[in-house]
Every structure is written in C-alpha cells, then in structure tokens.
Length: 292
Picture 1 (tube, helix red, strand yellow):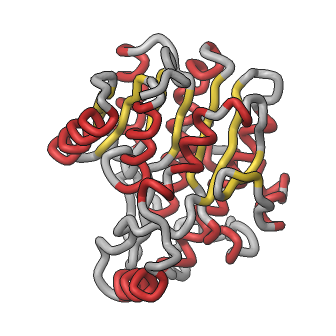
Picture 2: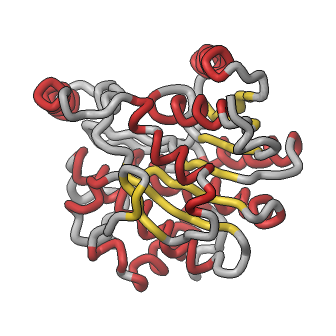
C-alpha cells in the first residue's frame, strides 16, 4: 500500500462494479480516502467489503446515488458535502448502454441522461468543493465509441425520432469529451483540471445486462476479441493514472488512452457545440432556468 494519495479524498461514481470498482481499489491502495457510489445498498456494501479487503484500507465509504435521477444526484452531493470538508478528485465513471429506448425519472433518454447529464450535474454540484481543495482533478470515463459520431444531434438529444443503442451510447461518449473540454476552458486558472479517457475494450460485462442485439453483439465481440481485450483492472489503469499521477499535474482539457494523451475525434473539438451542449445541459438539469 502506497501513500501517493495520502490525505486525498476521491469520489468514484459507479464504483461498485467493473472498472469503477478497480479504480476504487487502485486509489485506495495509494492511500486515498475513497467514496464510491452505487444505486443498490446490498451491491454497494459487497463492493465496499471487496475494496477494503483487496486494498487493505478501511478508508472507503459507500454513498447511494442513482444517476438516472437528478434528485438522487442532488441528494448525494448534499450528503457528501455534509460528511466531507474537501474533494481532491472526482472520477465520473457511472454509465451504461441500453438495447431499447427508455427514460430516466426526469424524462430524459436513459443513456444520455445517465452517461452525460449525470456527469454534468454531479461535477457542477461538487465544483465549489473541488475549487476549494485545489489543486484538484475531474476525470471522466469516455470511450473510443465517440469517434463514430459526427456531432451532437441537438434536434433530438432524447432520441425520440430514432434510436440505436450503440449510436446513442456513442453520442453520450462524445458528450463526455465535449463536456470535458468545455469544463477545462471554464476552469482555467482555478487549479482544477479536467481530463477524459478511453479505458480500452474491457471484459466488464458492460452492456450484457440487456436482452437482444446489444447483449448478443457484446458477447460475440468479447468471445472473438478476448485475447486482446482488457481485464477490469487493466481498464482502470488510465483512470487511476489521471486521478493520481504527478505526471499530469496541471494537465487539462485532454483525452487519454493507455495512460497517454491521445487525439480525440474532430467533432469533439467543436467549441460552439461544446458551449451549446453545456447551456442545454444546464437547462435540462435545472442548474439554469430554461429560456422563456
């Protein structure tokens, strides 16, 4: 167990399984006080016990948060602020992919709502604490799936006109990169950095909770590519690197893969789209009033 992150407080959203759990284990081993979020108490407690056991650290905490509910995210942020006096790193990791279209509790298409609006709202709600704890970091898990999208479809962000599970997932991951770059611009000079990453193709079971095509596609994909896919622990390495490494101190507004800065898609560098997405997201999440 190291002390690279001693006295640092880290939040890992969706830290109860997959690469989120491994990120929590890795940062706990480095000495951080790690707070994981989970939707389900029992699953969260099982993950908590696993993290403590493997990291040999008792400085791990579970807090409930359902990223398909804006009120749940707000409750989590408020409770976190009551329990803690600092936040050094926020790892936006909670996410999913869905075969068929569904909606969050607030009426947003689920993949966009959880994967993008969840990141957007929790980051903004905790931003004052991150700034007060600076130097601090925001690390957001995106995906190379963003490269397949030519731009945000602002006329149909909720995918009511057409729906493709993998297409909507790619849109949400493009939104993660646009959000990161806009956040970095807005945080310039604050001492808070914002970076995002592609974890690799990870054997996490991600996407296999759905019936139908996506489940079949993911299972087939992993069967064919198992020799070159990553374990959850390998997939978490870039998240851990961006959350903890002195090598990226002060680095912001970048996209990483395999712990190296990597080019993201041309669409992800559209500053006007990033600003527009930010403003729309503020309205969707209630951080700003909708225009009259």
